[in-house]
Length: 258
Image (cartoon, rainbow, N blue to C red; front, side, top):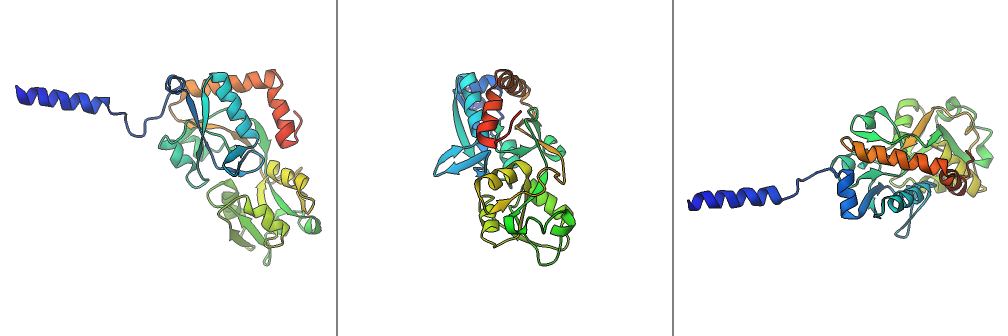
């Protein structure tokens, strides 16, 4: 009989321990009072860690989501290398960092609707803008291309660059500075980011932003089984579009008009 009660106590203890790697559903997020947002903090104008304070378009949208849900927002640091692994291990509920919707990521997650269309394009100095008028001009020996590991920029460069030198930077934020300083010649990045840096740094230019090499959309990834959260995120995005909030944020942070 003692063994029976001991076994029952052990079973009760085991059942009371939260499952490791358990993805939170919408009800659990609301009950906890906190929305956990994974963000890299290195991708202007979407997510920028400014001495511990996150800024940018996606940060503003995350705060809007939290306010609409009646919860607080907690920003969880992640990297481009570990973005999907951190999501699958349930370190955060939703990724918001200028994240491209790709089929490889969709296999491991579910995405919100797209909210910005863009393409891969070069960021160069004003002095070299006339030199780089095509991908073939960029993929030449002697040309140095700055790349941050783990994201779609690196994937594009690996697939398309055969002759130019690829220089790796751990921080995405360091690459535009390196281009401006002449340490590398080109940064291949999303047209939104390229246009942002060209607009905020007189030394930089995005000469092919109107004719990007690819066409993609940004979206917000969530756990593969987070159906209710996905529905709610899409609903909130629709409401932000309907009421003009999304257009206001795009103008403020992305210098884009709807």
